Image (cartoon, rainbow, N blue to C red; front, side):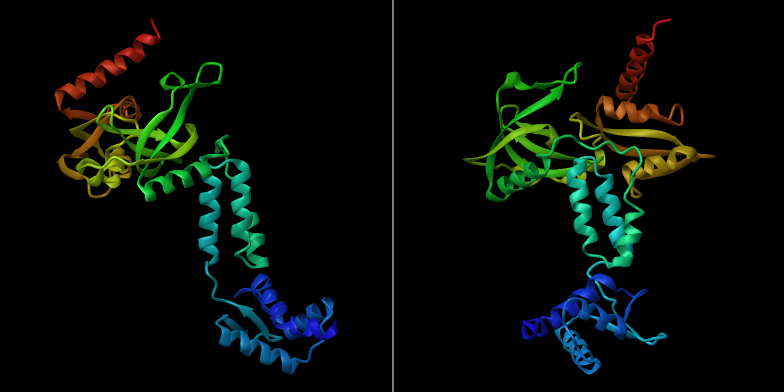
Length: 328
């Protein structure tokens, strides 16, 4: 039995170095020998030196820190602490993940860190006000859609929305949708499927967490020039909440106070020309929809539609309906 444990010495040493050490906190030779003793392995210092060299030859970045006393630690990891913090924040902040799936992923991320780093990550495991999805199947729905896209197959699914009683109401009369999946897009904390609808000869967007019972069919996916030329980046640049609508080339007069938000929406490369003190003319293609009008309304008179007049009139009517809903 003792001989078997000696053979495992190198593996125990590698595990303790990867799990317990980093550039800020290492293990002394006395601590290494003590931990090995706890698992029934007696060792001499010379054998540990040889084992550390073997691990270095294997590719593990074991550093020697000339501290008092000398410490040994793994410095170069797959992910640095700031990267792990970003991953934890991204997982905790993702609305498309259920709380259970989010917690599971965070545990996996923590497994990539040292003991000291895990303590620091624990302090970041709370995101205020983030409403998580209740649909646990979204993770597997994404995988099924990716499979269909890779195999160039159509998919069949049910799609629902919520009624005033918060109950699921199946769309399409409860009949299944049969679509050609084109691309998955992650927008505003949710996954959306962009699909080509042959019946309407156009693209449609579906929120994946509202898709049920997705089946990959044996039917070949539709192919045409529009699908082949689909540009997700172009869609994201003009879409608002992935709401389907008519693309419109528009010009806005933007007050300087709203410029940061406009750049956040359209990007730094958006066409913009100063026209007066504290004012710019911005041109962009937008997807005309209630979501776009809602985005515009938050700025009050700091962002105004200049052209086309038709779009400005539709926005005015949108605001008039809101005012009218509140009566006198």
